Amino acid sequence: MTTTIAPAAATVALLLADARLPSGGHAHSSGLEPALMGGMPPAAVGAFLLARARTTSLVDAGAAVVASRTAGVGPLAPVDEAWAARTPSRAMRVASRDLGRGLLRLADRVWPGSGAVAALHEPPGPPPRPLVLGAIAAEAGIAPEELVRLAVYDDLASAVAALLKLDPRDPADGVGLVLAGCASIEARIPQLARARHPEDIPALSAPQAEAWAESHAVAQGRLFRG
Image (cartoon, rainbow, N blue to C red; front, side, top):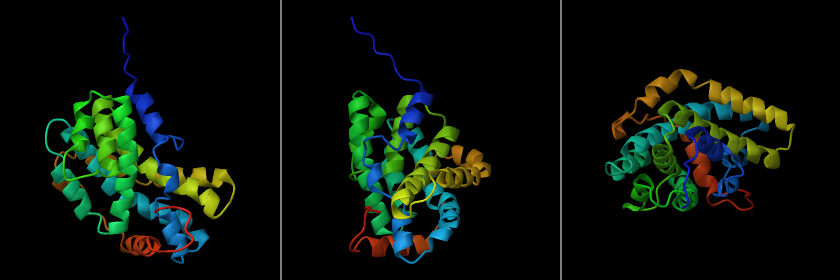
């Protein structure tokens, strides 16, 4: 007789935060390459990450929390629509759905009987990464507060991992940038962790980053997909 032992929520969170997770995240730069190709000086990377942490990352974090409370018990389409409405750039939406597709493939393998994960295969189509994170959190028992931190950390850490290829520097500098960005949203976590409905997802625009993403999508010689 084989006994299946479920991994602890903290272990799953560590897995999801690991840049080595084979779900395709290594092919994306969380908007950093588009910014640098768009003319942002490398010296502004720290400011860029702080701005991203307080805008795009929080939209994704809010969507992940709502999805974690919805997956398996209600339709995810309204959550998807609310996230998409708060992500005006088509290029950014496509990148997130690409990431979501890779992570969903992994989730299907690890949690084959999960109703929360199965719900991600319902219309309207490939879910964005925050919805997949939310469904996994629901299955693994990751608390909303930790899910917010995970979503923001993953976004910023992906950018810093890309930075080492785009503008090589001391990796320790990148660690400091990630920690500063994550610390900057701590005060917002309690509010985001209470999100239950699509309308609770914050609407935080990043127009310049969205413009860079659109230009990057058709650029030649790029290293990353977004």
